[in-house]
Amino acid sequence: MQASNRLLDFPKPVFSMLWQFMQRFNYELAVLSRFFIAIVGGYFFTAVSVSLLSVVVPVSKVDAVLLSVSASILIYALVFIYSFYVQSLKTVWISILLSIVVQFFILSLMKGWL
Image (cartoon, rainbow, N blue to C red; front, top):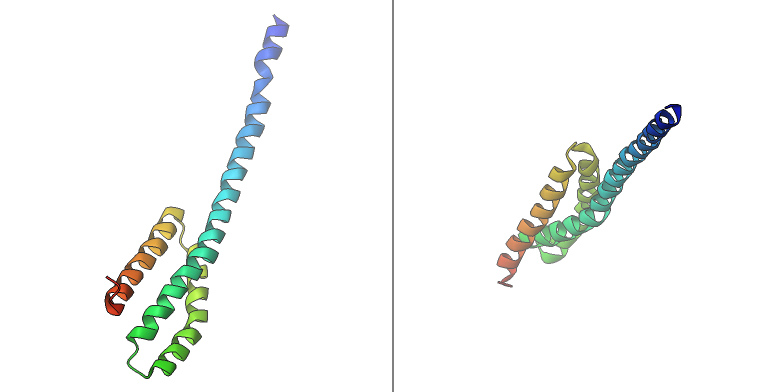
């Protein structure tokens, strides 16, 4: 009778340790995902924003490019901060990817690519 009780008590610590590991792994995966969207998504968001800004600004082409390149540092920093500021990871991914697509669509319409 005691042996069977010991066998039933054995898995509890194992499942507890496994559960703690999975919770920690999920947290680390979420942080890694935020860094990925901040770095890679921020790069593409900034690239499309700079391209769109250089087309939209009503000054000479050289001045528009210089202004947009200068603004790119601020845009990239804001996207990086935004990716860690919003609590929902799903909201961060959707908002950044959707805004990249919308900006690229507007840019392609203005440049006549479509």
